[in-house]
Length: 109
Image (tube, one colour):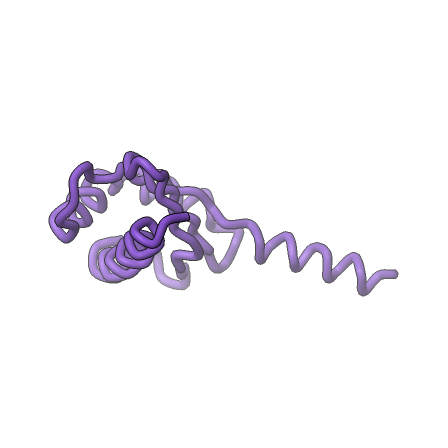
């Protein structure tokens, strides 16, 4: 991965964190963290992996982001001074949930 893409990923992660804090309207008790940002080499798409607590509210978070996606994309576009502007694709990061499942299995052994 090029240094340019690495810097862009960090910048997008930082800006999205701010945008989520200010503009994303989630129900109380639901927390979202941007686990990973991965931009394609041609800068057309950025895959954003989200960590959700509690995990059972993951579908709710994706639906809420889906409704507000254009506002989030617009806010990010205003902060970035690059061309082309990457399109955001949101997904749930299940790493933590899978680690918990493995830990439970190991404790049963």
